[in-house]
Image 1 (cartoon, rainbow, N blue to C red):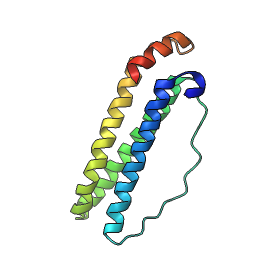
Image 2: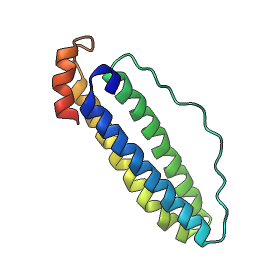
Image 3: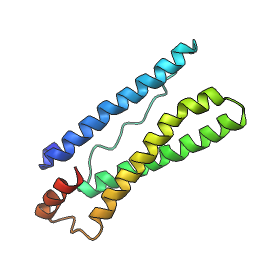
Length: 130
């Protein structure tokens, strides 16, 4: 975002990334408190090039929605298997994910009908979005 002049968006996403590290630390602490060594799977390199700011938001929305569904499925399995302590722990993540999906959905609603190739219009909308 910085490379394309969307400085507020870049600042917002940097803050979001820091928040994600906090979520990972909370998860790690929960695991180690139960004497479980967390295993971190290899992740694919994320997409780093986007056509425009809307493309960034659409991609993030898709990722957040997918993670929301994963949390829902995992939580259902945990509840059904009687792992209530873990189910309760996951409540934080389910709520955070729900909030995130809602936030990015709202951003997409604001961007609906926008001329994505109009840099001035996108910069003006950046003020509203971030």
